[in-house]
Image (cartoon, rainbow, N blue to C red; front, side, top):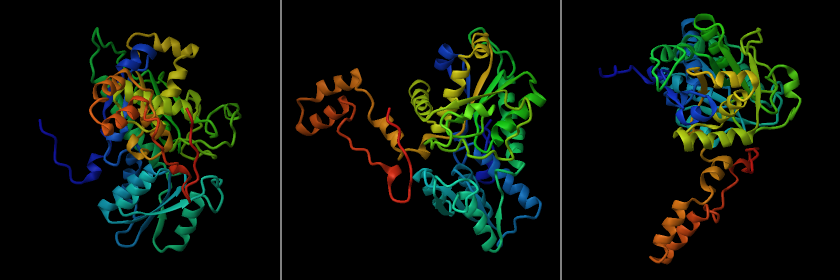
Length: 395
């Protein structure tokens, strides 16, 4: 049956695939990845943007020709909002810390949004932070409205009503076979936490309506304070991290602290996250972003714990990781350029060099560079350009 014709881009939000991670599963016990970069705006945050706009319209908070949507964001929520507002005809202002990628800003501007950059190091409650600047603009601009992903109940509800049920439906709808056994339920779900709306909504969807015994694993970067118990946040407290879209220096209202919502928290480092991205690309062909690497590295570490090993060794256990966005948001970032262009020389690269070496000096130079892992390439430090305070990881 041919797919239906959609009314607009918002019809292509969500309904993302749940994909087997067979090579990782064979070694680690992680079975499935929810691939959110296939959503229309490129990330899991499309879902909350769509719902927040539609509910605000329904409640009369957004008025065509008058309202200006203003939102502090790491970028992906902003892109989802800019997409929704482009469809519906609202003006948009996005405030975003300097460390967020140039690609996110370019996408936002392409969708018609105004973008204001703020100091990465500013505390969340500082007037100079992306939140503080958004609040100032909202007070001064007629028709300005902050939908506020940090407090808006429609953030977790979007995942409780769409992302979670999609995962459950995919698992229930896939029969168990001898070669691909299945418990018939979601046994473990892992996701990174930023606002916390994603993991809160997913947990409620799975535990309330599907499997009360499901284990929810939250992943939080070192330097953030979202993990529980608080003792997990002592190491690296206050340090900056490069990975985007997860972690905060305050606990957003939409991250539920209710017992049983998140069963285990794992802290992740930039190095672990970016190595996991490389692993997903090379072993599974998935072009995911840095926070997907955080989720993957976190759940793989949990699967090595005593409780995790029991799950990993259980035939047919469905362990799911949420992969929030794709690499195309980060292709100018030094961590990605280093990973992609400074790989170890492969036997195939050496073979190419040996075949083409005699042909010409031009080819020889290029292939020699390939064979040596593109060692001669100078990667611009894009994170340290004026007005963009960032850090890079050396592997």
